[in-house]
Amino acid sequence: MQAATKKEVIAVMLKHGRSDLANSIAAVNAAVGPGHIKPLKKTLEEVVRDIQTLVRVEIDDPAEKKLATDAIKAIFDAMGWLSKLSSVGASLHVEADGNIEDDTPIMPWLVAESVIEEVVRFATSKGLEDEANKLYDVSRDLSEKLSDDANKIYKANKKFAKQMNAPGDKGRDQLYVWMRHWLSAELKKKHPKIFSVLPQSFMTGKELH
Image 1 (cartoon, rainbow, N blue to C red):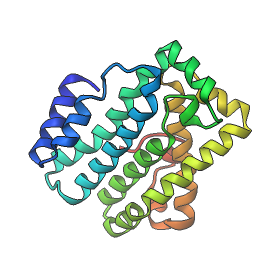
Image 2 (cartoon, helix red, strand yellow):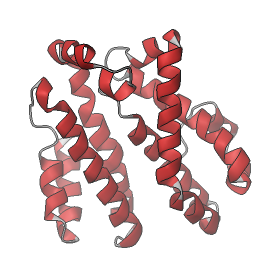
Image 3 (cartoon, rainbow, N blue to C red):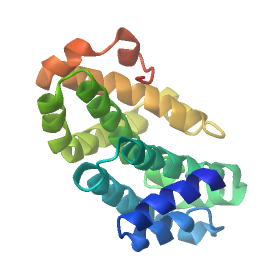
Image 4 (cartoon, rainbow, N blue to C red):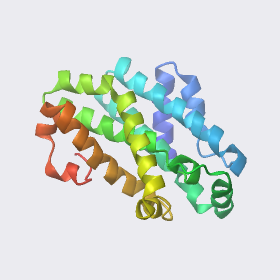
């Protein structure tokens, strides 16, 4: 997370009385050893969940809402440096149980939630606020399903596993593509009104704008 962006996000969190979130965000880039990776991911998960609640319930200003929402992806991006530490990678592979989150710095649940939130914002902008709210209400369960699906494919498909273990941000970026594709299939079945306004590019993995 870039310093300026982090400062702005922290200011929003403090404005809404969430010094705990501000402190967690401030600590995201702290250098940690391999033994601290999973606790850090747990902290990030709690931060992301709380920011999502804050955005939906308390923040009304559009600029602040967008900033806080973008912070979710920025927090995730801040984890990319883990993949650049060879000692971390070696440690993760020793302890791995075959899941993406254990083998790599990637957090599938967060990728899934980020993509779902992307669709929620897009659907709202298209006048489908009620449908967007329905999707948001099931976002936790849906993100878990998409994450579980990703891990099942990871275990069964060597090509997919190789993609996820690519250096730098390549694995994470590829998972975003797959998540958008899989989410499109779910929306077609369970949220057809939202699916009907999605551009074809989203179904092939492109970000919504």
